[in-house]
Image 1 (cartoon, helix red, strand yellow):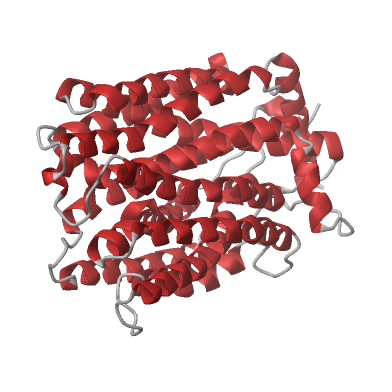
Image 2: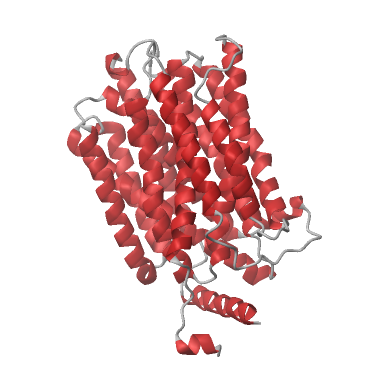
Length: 459
C-alpha cells in the first residue's frame, strides 16, 4: 500500500488558491449571468425596442455557434503547451477582451436604431462575448480537476465555489431589477455601473492567475482527432446521463434569472426581500444537507432527492406563484436546487471524467468540458427564446409596464418561468435510474484512481 495512504496524509489545496480561483469564477459568472441570464434580452427588447422575434432568432443562431465553439476549445486546451500550463494562458490573457465586450453590450452602437442595426449588435456582441467566456470559464471550470485528484480535496474547492457562485447568481437576480433602465429613462447610471463591473472583472480574473496552478496533467492521445474525441465522450453512458442534468441546471438558472426580472414587477404582493430571503435560506440548507449526506447517501441519491424537491416547488409556482406563502416555498426549494446544482453536479462531472480515465487510460478534462458546453450552451439560448415566446403567446405587451399587464399575461410569466423547469427536473429524476457510478464497486475504483495519481506525483 502507498505510504501516504498508510499515514493518512490528505491532499490539500491552499485557502489562497481556492479563494482566488473561486473569486475569478464568481466575477466571470456574474458578467455572464447579467448578459445571458435575461439582462441582454431585456435591454435590447424592452429598453431599446428590438422585436422579440428577432431577439429569439439571435439566441437560436448563437446556440448553433456554440455547437462548434466549446468542443473545439476543449480539444485545443487539452493540447495547449506553455510554461503557465494548459488553462492559465486563456484565463490571464483573455480577461481584458472579456471585460471589453461585456461593457460595450450596454451602449447602443453607432449603426442607428433600426431593427437591423439592433439585430447586428446583439448577435455580434453575443458572438464575441461568448467566445471569450468559453475560453475563460471552461478553463476555470476544469481547474479543480487539475488542482486536486481526490474527491475530498475537490469537494472542498466546490464548497468554496458554492459561496462565490451564490454571489454570481444573486447579482443578476437582485441587482439587475434594481438598476435596469425603464423604457424612456436615461441609461447613464446603468451604463456606469456595468462599466465599473467590467473593469473589476478584468482585474480580478487577471490577478487570480498568479495564485493557483495545475497539478494533474491530462494524459492525452495526440493522434485522436476532434471528431473521435467527441464521439468517445458520448460513448460514456454516465456522461450522457450527466448531460441531462447539466443541461437542466443551465436551462433553469437562465430562465429563472430571466423570469425574476418580470416576476416582482408583475406581482407586487410578493416582497423581494421575503422571496430572496427564502432563496438564501434554501441555499444554505441545501449546502449543509448535500455536503453532509453525499458521503452517506452518495451523489446519485442526493441528486435524485434534489430533483424531486425542486420540481415540486417549481410546479407549485406555475399555478400559485402569485401568492406569498407559495412563493416563499418555491424560492426555498429553488435555493436547495441551486445548492445541488453547484455542489452535486460538479462532483458528478468529476466522477464521469474519472470513469473515462479508468476505462480508457486517457484523461480529458478539457474535452469533456467542451462537449458539456456543446450540450448546455444551447440551453441558454433555448431558455431565453422559450421565455420570450411563451409570454408573447399569453399576450404580454412590451409597450406597457409589467404591473399593468392583463391577468392572463401575468399568468404567462409564471408559466414561462417555471413550467419547463418542473418538467425537465422530472426527466432528470427518471434518468438517474440508469446512472451507473454509485455503490461500493465505484467507490473502490475511485480509491484506486486516487492512489495511482498519488504514485504519479511521487515519481
